[in-house]
Length: 472
Image 1 (spheres, rainbow, N blue to C red):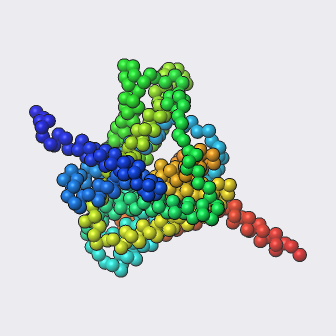
Image 2 (cartoon, rainbow, N blue to C red; image 1 turned 60 degrees about the horizontal axis):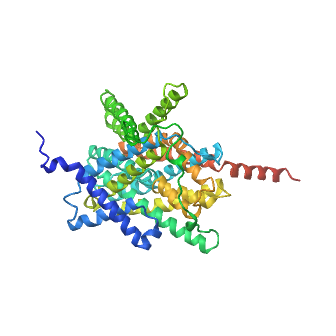
Image 3 (cartoon, rainbow, N blue to C red; image 1 turned 135 degrees about the vertical axis):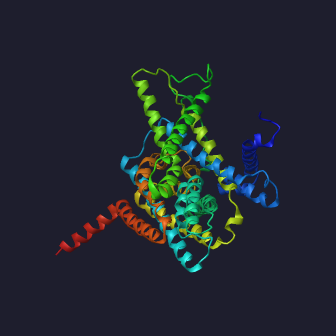
């Protein structure tokens, strides 16, 4: 018989108590400290940093369980993507399909650039430093931490820990990846704010923070013919049930693959990667369920609308907030004590190259709204999409430019472009030779994406050069 007086019966709830308490305290601190408010740091990241600050003092140290925080980060990522996939997109597109595809290409090319920079730092350091707790392929965690966020940084960090252990290296990949993700949030927000103020002082940008006021209409809360808020079952219960139903299908898929006999390569590489792609399977299954529900309504097998966008937005937002707090709180500085140099180099160079690359792409692709495009993309590619939206709202509070739509709609082409890159993530850590091959493939991919993104500029120069040669 279960004893509810046993602390073990409260173990998981205690982790959520800590997360919620940190979120509420961080929100108060952010409200009363103007400097933090102007920095645009996400409250969830500030909450995670507060936990990290008090852990060395002995506070929260006994309450915060690293393993539990990592599990929360992993599942919050998957559940958040499921909730986003279930939404019926109601976006009045003010941008062309080509521009959305180009934006997805910018996202994927930035992952590639970050991977190249990461490996360009960690491979030479591994050969020169010769430490037994540093992994040569750890630079590939840069695009996961910066480009994908804490969830993917943790997923691949755990996978890389296993690869390193097979080669006799005591590398703590989860801490390394989560540290990159936390640093990305910090640098993305701080660099974004500083650059905004530089542009404002030069007269190139007008800050419009005061113009923004979020107003919801009835259509935002519910669409026509939706199920009632509270009848025999609450509407919130239905939304949570749909999300969990999809996530259960994700688990069954991954568990089924785990039972297959795929040989040595499948066991050491494919299966760990399959578990790490929980967010991708959640997106696919969520989209499929949405199609089934919408089809059932069109053929009148289902009369009421069961999907509520507003509630799913709140579920996804809560999951991502919990993911950021738990992911940051799970960092153990003791595991990073000897490898601060590569971590700092990877994060610093990654931020600089991301800034330069995204700035060049946005200046070329969005000549009419280059700054709006830059801040939205830079915020997303150093943190999450919500960070991009936070930065964008500072200069485009009413989303009058297509930058917001580009950011939302680019997800599908970005996944299509970036999926081969994600597959390379499982090849690089197998050996030094595989890592060098991965670096070479990334370089080729970068050239291909650059030719696509800057094709108009390249071909225009060629046409101009040809016309000059034809002139007498």
